[in-house]
Image (cartoon, rainbow, N blue to C red; front, side, top):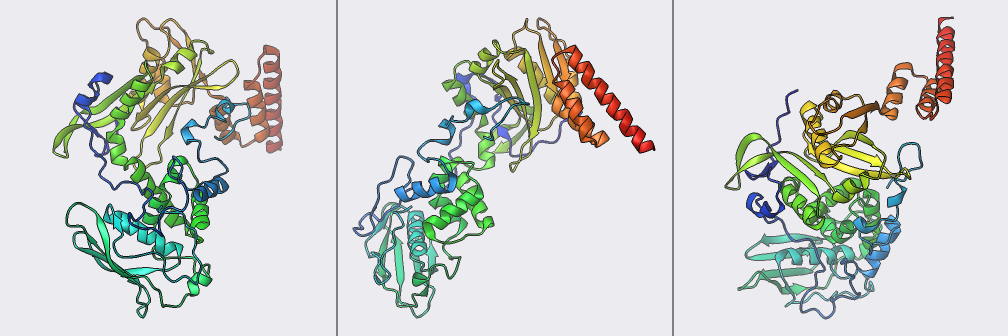
Length: 471
């Protein structure tokens, strides 16, 4: 089976197949992330009134944000997501019970207070910080504005959306450096204050954009990357008292991921360095990255080779498998990101029926070549040469062909069908749940006598079913 055409974004340097951690700097071109820094706590440097009113924790969250995070997600944000192992021992094999695994705080001033602390002379490190600061100010006090002048090198001016209102803020860059400062302003609103007294009259704000939400909630999203969109919507409502549409929050979360971790192209370009860093902190880890044939292209002025596939396995898991049952389950699952592909996974289970991940691989598609490559590395890097192992899988021909490959010096593999796939195919053919349940019970039988009884009951039920249909 021919391999599909690779995407042009999967690129690495010429010697990316070299698996020596010490040579990573030589073969992996590391580009700095071409993006703005994430929105950290931004305060005007000379402001007495608009300084922080609450302390910020090590994750960059205020007490109010931390409380809103806990209400929306039901977990403590101080525990990093990848350090939370409270449910790690609950993953079990089939048949058991499984668990699926800003600026300053937005405290509102009294509505009778017309001046909110904006004044000439306030300094900001960048124009981006000034934009986020003024947006936070506008959203928090329910006072939308419009941009009058926008020039990254000369000036940036915002004005109240009401033409008769004199509220206006003018900012310019400093002569030296990248700092910006407020040149002049009229911080008094003389327009109708309806939105201040009734903030829920409108569930939208022109400054509450997906970009602003991404910057404002980037620390919360970093604490819990799998936070559901509805939880992010609840965070926005708790902090700003606006009900934002699902689509806007979805775009905000994608923008936050890009600010925090880079875009999809950058992620694949960093894959060899990422695996090298993982191997550096996990001695004995096995990782292999291969290009797509001999194809090359020019990327940012350098000649690079196109990413083909990657394999990795942790030494702790390899050592643990020596004390587990000689049974491995393999399967592939499609990737749902911007660039499609397939992840191949091999797992085992210990004496307590807890899952043990053994090896992972990123490939373009499930085919004979990729399965042979994955199974070959699995046998040579994870399984001891003298150990005979049973491989459980579905009926993919690539797996069946790979199991039959004879590797000199290594014991042969045995293959059995996956019960879940087998029963699903059986049900798809007969559409009879009672027969499918009998088949599943027979697959779980641990004695010849029980197996024979279940199979006889299955055949008898089948005959009765067929007889009823014929009559």
